[in-house]
Image (cartoon, rainbow, N blue to C red; front, side, top):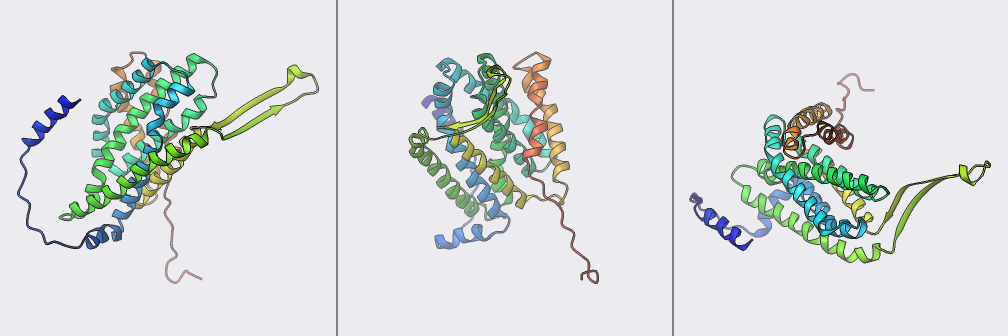
Amino acid sequence: GVLVGAIGLLFLARIPEPVMPETVRRPWVDVFRAPLQHREFRPVMIFLACWTFAANLIAPFFSVYLLRRFGLPMAWVVGLTVLSQAMTALAFRSWGAVADRFDLRTVMRVSGALFLLTVAAWPFIDLLTSRGLILTLLVLVHALAGLAAAGVNLGTGTLALQVAPRGEAAAYLATNALISGVGSALAPLLAGISADWLETQRFTITVQWRSTWGEDAAMALRPLDFHGLDFLWAASVGIGLYAVHRLLAVARHEPGQDRAVVSAVLQEMRAHARVPLRALSSVPGVREVMGLPFSLVARLVPERRAVRRPRRGQAG
């Protein structure tokens, strides 16, 4: 890792750097005030801060969840991590093509909702009893999470730069990095402090059916059983949904067209998703199953409706 990092620094040193224009020194309060008061940039900062907080809230516990809750060997944990990273690398080009065709904010809403869908699936996979089904769903979830992470990483790296006013990007990006950095630092600290206490907490919903025909006719169903790290997963999904909702404030297309644009993006990604999937599996049925969650993401993406205002003379 150190050797690869040193090679990266050598290539970084060869990048030509343009001469920066002379700037006037300003108080740091004035530097941060402009981004915080900017109507379009403020929702971007809220989104990135909430998203980094939600992502880092559970990031340290993915391996812990797989090892302790599912009882997987270390080889499976490493293999699933490699699968997710491989899907991220293969999907960058597809997300880039979709971002060029559609709005970057819509792409981030779709990829963010897909990522949250994979996070929300973890506690429910734990309810299953079939070992084969659990492993199959874990592979599916990690592949989809890697696919969605590519779109999110592509957007978070350029969204703030795209919205920042020309000539003032340095101050805006510095303010955004400060706020996002605080969120990404506090999230694992709070998660680590609360993890031990959450291990003693449990929330279960049980549905029972008892019949007078005898005990053999009785049925019991447990659709929800949250305990331990499941509460962190639920908190991460809730904060992430709020972050995706904040992207509505920076959307530039016409109000009322959100659902149509999202549907078009999902159709485009279903077509592009088959390219990286061919490198992982040659079974047609697997590729169709991987495309199924794209039809569910639209339900997680909020829709902004146009509000009709009465014309003058018609009010009252």
